[in-house]
Each structure stands twice: as C-alpha cells, then as structure tokens.
Length: 208
Ligand code: ADP
Ligand code: MG
Image (cartoon, rainbow, N blue to C red; front, side, top):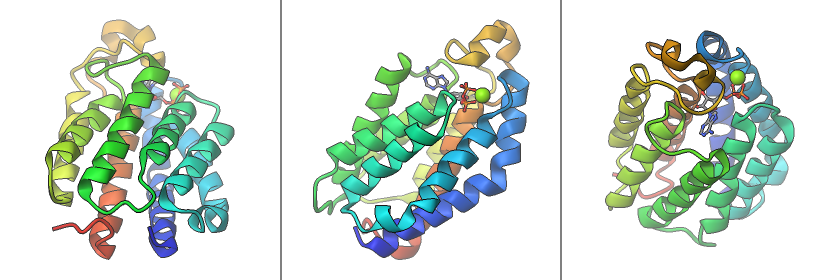
C-alpha cells in the first residue's frame, strides 16, 4: 500500500473520530461510563502523531503498529479491542495485497481477534454487530463495493438499538440497555465509512 494511502487513512479516520467524539461520549453516557469519545479521540490522536513512522511501513506492518498504538494509548475496553482488530488484520495481510479477497481475509482475522479478546460474539450489542456483517460482506464480494459496505455497517448499528447488552459495561444495565445505540457499534460504523471514503477516492483496492 502506498504511504500516501496510509496517510490518507490515518488523517481521515482521525478527523472523523474528532468530529464525532462528543456523540460517542453521549452514547456511552447513556449505557456506559461516558468515556468512549475520549478513548477513541486519544487513540486516534496517538496514531495521527505517529503518522510518519506508520506510513513508511508496508500495509500489514502499518496496521500492526497502529493497533499497538491504540493498545498503549487507550485505557478503556475499546483500546485493546480495536488494537486486536488492527494487529491481527496486519498479521494476516499479505505483503503485496492486491485483491478484495486479501483484505477480506485480513479483516476476518481481525474480527475473530476481537471476539477472542472480548470473549464475545454477535447479538450481544457491541461493535461486533457492525464488524461481523461487514466482514461477511467483504468475504463474499469480488469487488470493493463501498456503498454496500457502508449500508451493512449502518444496518448493524441500527440493530443494536433493540438489543440487550450482555458484554461490556452496558451489560450491567440489563434490560435498561435496550433502546440505545451501542457506542462501539457507532465508532465502528464511523471508521468503516471513513475507510470506504478513502478507498473510493484513491481506488486503493481496485473498487468498483
Ligand atoms: P469501556 O467500556 O471500558 O468504558 P469504551 O467506552 O471505550 O470502553 O468502549 C465501549 C464499547 O466497547 C462498547 O460500546 C462495545 O461496543 C465495546 N465492547 C465492550 N466490551 C466488549 C466485548 N467484550 N466484546 C466486544 N466489544 C465490546
Ligand atoms: Mg466507556
């Protein structure tokens, strides 16, 4: 992957997280401890600060370094979870990724690492409600369809509203978690939109 593409991914994800930090915190205020926006902001600020070192690495190593940066800079559950996603994705990424299939395999490995780390699965009102359908869609696609990926993320996020949380802090609320969107599912949706926007604009994965 070109350093310019990695730089664009870092700056756009950072920008989007900054622009939505308050919204993420508000969502976490309703069913958690109100720090999700702060956690995400801190993590993506740390990645943005390391942009030069990260962007000179090959794609897989860049993802691993970005993931380590999240783990080291974020205290909440989301740091290690997103960190695992990026680190495992990076490890599974071939040196010269060319096809959508290469990215699909890597993303799938990342999502599996989140499940392992979080001891969680779909249907528990977490970021996995977004990550799992996106991974499934990527795996079944032979072209990068940004609109379909954004729509899958949006639908996954919307599905969290009526779910009862059984993992993370929101699970302490039991039935009172029902009726609210999951903050981590919202941040995952924001990140997937941001990545789709960059990939679309630079045709990094040979999209349609
Ligand atoms: P904390 O819960 O430590 O305050 P954050 O507020 O930053 O951390 O992140 C909360 C989000 O993390 C939740 O909205 C949920 O999407 C996600 N999450 C929490 N626990 C798990 C888990 N075990 N598996 C998957 N995702 C989880
Ligand atoms: Mg929180």
